[in-house]
Image 1 (cartoon, rainbow over the protein chains, first blue to last red):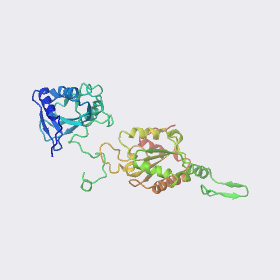
Image 2 (image 1 turned 90 degrees about the horizontal axis):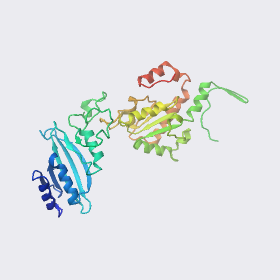
Image 3 (image 1 turned 90 degrees about the vertical axis):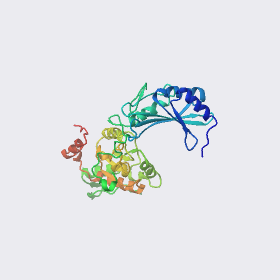
Length: 168
Length: 181
């Protein structure tokens, strides 16, 4: 069942203006507005949503990796919340593996600081303009970005586990 | 009368009791172990029950917990140790004065447990030497007490020369732990 928030249409219109119609919008199964945009339009779009549509809260910011999606292997997902009207939107930006760079949102939401560091830590996505882009959760000596799909989840230093029995 | 420890073998007569220094010191050490609880997860909760009135670790002379490594002689590691936590744990061990013992409580501290993953240390014995392992996920307080009693046995029967032996120094060096001269 799709139950769109009353203001969804005005946001769709605002997205169209802010992105010169280059972003696509759709509602997911739960009535949440999805916006797929590009790195060029991200800041303008988020600024517009924050200033003119009451999305003053950045709920979450994360990355994901789809190795099979050639040319858009990585993705950064932003969840914004309008606390007054209790309205949420999801913004996604695709990134190609050879250019993992996206502008930072720290100037708009201070809370983006650590979330962007986390996304950098696990996926190696570069947030341009971030004041302190370094690892936050993993140990500083780690030399890879562990949530990329090419790396095994398991600890690779173990030699006492038989792959047949442990599903490794 | 509360009896804390069995008297060691010795020669007893009217008004005196003679035994070896090893045994007297071992008896004192074993019944006054000061633990440093390094509790990071659910095994730490079981340890809290172990410390509580029902199980009462104080019966073994170990009621004096301290979070300062310089005053303690039993490091109790209870819970998952992330690789990022490893250097901290090693530093705590380094700061403890000899003689010191290490009790590894629970599957995670012993082997990484279910967390066979890039961020978790696969057993604390990769960075510090362990004296007694307590299995379980998490172990019940009775098992933790059993582990402590095994440590007591080690402390009681340890030769006073052991910590100065070449074998012991080699063991520490194999963990890249500096030995004081």
